[in-house]
Image (cartoon, rainbow, N blue to C red; front, top):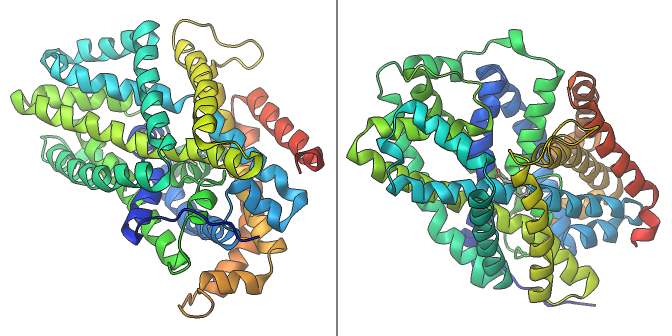
Length: 470
Ligand code: PFF
């Protein structure tokens, strides 16, 4: 049966929407603080290696799965293999897990838009630090902003692909690029910025462990929106005329570019102000305001623009996360778009409430020894996305017919993909074992072993009972 499927309005629209999904809090909030915690440049190099060797190739695979079937994550994988349907289910679960904490940080960012114009940059560095700590550990304020952020998602996703996501991305993504370049320029011209650049670009491998590799792999998947079917879903809306490898290359380049730019915006300033690189998740909300505080009146303007940009980046990513669940409900469960969006939104709100309150109000969970925020983060980023990517590579390399892939990636032989054989070899032989090895070493090394084992148990249960998912 031919189903008429909504398509992206234009090529630029698709690239921006896919880049909008990729570029988000992962690049501007997460990448810098992980880099800070994992020793700087060595982490960046490992991350870049994973992007080139694994990330971009899995993205090509996801686009191909989505467009060749015209279906979102679960349906696409099911078309090729009933045995692996659980991978689509893992993707839907990952979307829920990420949306269990992403809106919390999105909400912080929205709150900082307002903070920017209500005197944050008139405070001393210590006060800026304390303001953030007090804000995220409180109850009502972060919850309020988180719900506003989620409501924005619901509004956009309810409008559907062309009307909502694409329109928003088209205006907002270019704004973000320009802003970041601006801030990076300011940061590198501060006195004492050189140490920050050295931290970013002179590798020190002495701190590298199995945990560093797992963090870098998780970040590569998280940042490129891979391993959970978001790019399968976006690919399913892509017209048959587009070249998939080319689009994957552009999206990856934009994503890496923004992450590095965010690093350049942050670390020179951080060192210039004599701060510690391992600040943790507060990095962007503490260091950046300190930079702006030093700038006087101009700082308010920069600060305001920065947090608007961060909120926008977060929003164009979170809508893609929500769309993974919503398109599953539409394609596989025949739910109406609006109903799917509201139902999904409510569950995500409940999870995000738990995550937000775990920053200060709730004690860490027994057994896991982390709060809901970290639980959702570790499960999605260190377990589900990596394993999801591994299974997506296995399905693509071992189950989908090689000639079907060749046709899909060359648009029936009308366009060129010179690296097809190399790509197929990597997807089939290299990427699955590489992810497996990184996961094993990461688990051995990581502190939150219980969380990891819990995640793996969920994957195993899903795999074993995958027949029931048909
Ligand atoms: N790539 C997004 C970011 O870097 O913030 C997060 C994300 C979006 C992850 C969509 C996964 C996904 F499917």
